[in-house]
Length: 531
Picture 1 (tube, helix red, strand yellow):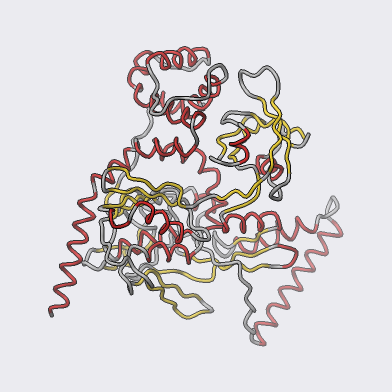
Picture 2: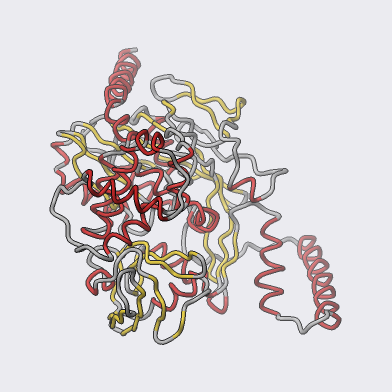
């Protein structure tokens, strides 16, 4: 259930996030190496040809040429697209967004919004944020921001309007179902910290659950803090959730893996055309805490998430459960440029501890196919390596899980309810005429399910009585999740989703397999030491 819901909101962002956050350094500044005389001559000739073409376009194009659009949106991105899918140029707006993402915080009101039918809908305010404290709810329509109507505005534009320096005010007019008049909110912007380690709790006695959403500044430190709060010495098993994690800062991926490996273990290595091989080792190690780990991944787990899962797999430290990962084995260095622009350029290929290159082939495919491909089994049979205990692993198309797991597909009625946002819209409708407070441990009863049934009929949903009976449990869980967001917080809703997620339950069941890996590698290492 948790994975299904996350995917709905994640997929539209995957191209942007994978390209700007997938295993990047930076920002940093580097001086280019001196070129040879022949190289300089070739570059000068090519540059002269480019400016000749540009001059002809500028003088003769049907309308007045916008230089920024021609260079920033055309020439530079066009050149980078001939290199690889992850090298990218950022205009000032996108470069600022990249730096905010890397820092993991920004100043604003703290809520997720999404465009639907020309309206900007509040998906959820973050717990404790200015929007949350002001009383803005999921399902509210953002009608105006500082007097400007938001109808038909791009969601990014509305999000930018809501952001601003800490301590500054923003006036938001909300349309809410059940309220006859628009609601006005005077909100003071504040620092919004988006923790990359969002969930860390006991999924069952002795077994901890931790989810890392992406790798930003301080992710390694935040993970250690989360584990310390749980009590590291009390952990008998860990479910590490990296599903839909697009990656992020390379050094933070290394810092996360460091906490689970033995001191001195190789985490990852990389080298490129302009640099020798560099090997990263676990500097601190797990201090002897060798509890079993099950790592959850899917086809959207990329880059730094693959560095962590690849390191744990190669050292037989974790049992990988899920789908074959994205397959991004390239590292970008961020170069700040003039006028607050930036360049993320692929400078290295990285290799897992066993020496695997897990980059998926991107030649002879469109960027769309690369990001939204179906070839999730494209391993490289020529890149065969061994884990510490002697298991065979392959390079090529991502990290292949030790145990495959895919969520059961939704049936036709479940797909219709999800596609039409039925649970979200019913929750908005319900709380339009009921108190938004619910008791702890609340769950939908027969009366509420009946009300949902009648509401679906009014919405002209196409279903039969048999459909409704068959999917009763799915509807009950989905309603509980959505209503928790409004009544409690998005965090409580997420926890409920995780606790009822069948893949998390499968991970707990697979914990003995992770323990068997640890026992196997200990035995192999002991035998090697004895010879």
